[in-house]
Length: 546
Image (cartoon, rainbow, N blue to C red; front, side, top):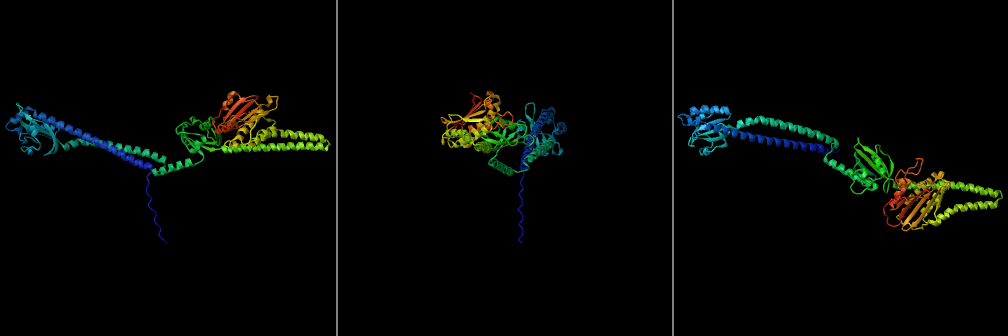
């Protein structure tokens, strides 16, 4: 059996939060270290300057002392100047005070064994009457020192005075501030590291511990999935501003241009849709109408009030098919009722024949046949377009079953082949079918207030370069103040509250989709006129009162 190959070692992938933590700690450490170094250099520079000023003041004070001038001219300068120089050194805190002759031979020194030896340092400028400072390594080690001349009454150089502070003494003075500085820097580094750790812990929770490559892949998958789904998806923040909108949502809602960051109520969407989206309660499978489509809307809240998710499904085709199915179902019911009535009439004819009333039987059958054929002949003669003709005959049967007389005006005339291929038969059924259904309902509702029987009048003809479809009823009509709401989803002529308010909204949408117009007027009742262009659509819709 072949030996099993060991699995390759897994490469350690540090999360984005971990990488940021390391980078931030390095930056904080560099900033703190840089600040500490600058502070140290600044403090050391100030300490050096202070030492130079201090030794310069001591050297000038000693050189200007009359006792020093007198001792220099005396027989034994060391006996007088050594105690004096040591007292000054102790009182001023300098490391040494040396008095020497013009040849550089010491008369005083903190170490007595160095008295009588040559001074270590530069004295040329002092012999020339100048005072200068330098850092030089002498018997006490490296020191900051000053050499200044001692002048007599004639301003002649008769001796030299040097005062200095060793570098070790200056460093000892800096040790305390340096320790404090190190402590502050350490505390700042610890505080910065703790803050960085807390911030990155929160970032790690939000990124779920993923690294940059994983986040990049997740974003790419997210974008690919977002734009591949056919359903519309819109994300809103807590202020109802658009955070994300995929391609399908743009198409379903008819959005153009940049929408990210814009409030949902400024996108030109229907008021009913905006109200459902911004409402407090989530929406489940609610049918909404946009400019040209029927969509099914669902909403849900993101987290604890972070925003809202909207999903949209295209329901346009299904809604049209549902309308056609309702029409077919209505036709079936009407045919069943007609079959029942025909059976009753046939029984009446048979009974008349059995009673030997042959002439009355023929007259009754002929009258019924003429009455039934009259509307069919009128529709077929005026409207050669098969879809419209079939729809009108079916709706007439439905209206008759409900006790409403549906008539076709004499000026109705549509030849076969006149309608362009771009004018879908489904849209014609939507427009004319919903107009007739709405008119029949309105005529029945208003029958109690009129002595005449309910009636619906249909006009279908070519008007210039437009197809004109007009439906009038004998109902209560539409009030002028309600004209703007007629084609809004939810508006209905039904008084029992059971209307869905979709019929006229679908009529307006189909008219817009085909570039037509809708006019609302009033005669004996409501008069609704739809004009659909036979040529290039204009993409507009209007509601006009007479």
